[in-house]
Image 1: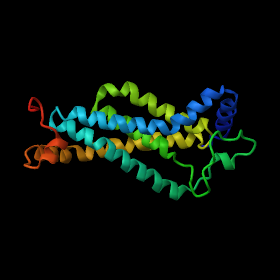
Image 2: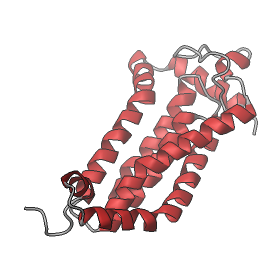
Image 3: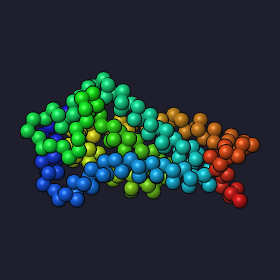
Image 4: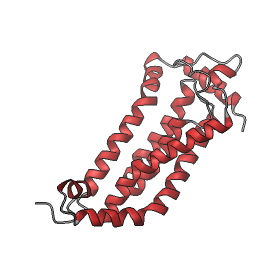
Length: 203
């Protein structure tokens, strides 16, 4: 899918926005990842008081997100698409330094991580969907806004992340749930702390 013209339109628009908007986009493109990390931790901590399945889903969230990232890296190495900030003629200069050649464009790693994290967190804690989905979409948009990805890179990344997460959660939930249940009966304090005491068992 050729999204070069849309890339030009978005980057041209970015250059007309107030400086605080441009700065916010630059910050969000990385800060969003940190916020997803915080949500992973909060979701896991909250799940420790629930049943083994709740803990399993919370534990799987960052794991399947990491798998999605690896999948995006593998796909990048196959496609070898140059970054638009280097390849698109007559486009506005990117707001952040253009990644070096060899750091390929398709798919967007940030969008892949965002798509995976958004879905995984929503599965583990359904109410978070009203937060994680807008976060993922804004993170994807920010990668085009700052000039380092085509819109098609972002769409592919979001879909890849969501798909890997869906498959990973489906395939691993039962096994992870059994491991959590086993850890809760362990004599190792660290295992019990990690898996949580379970419903109504916290002193």
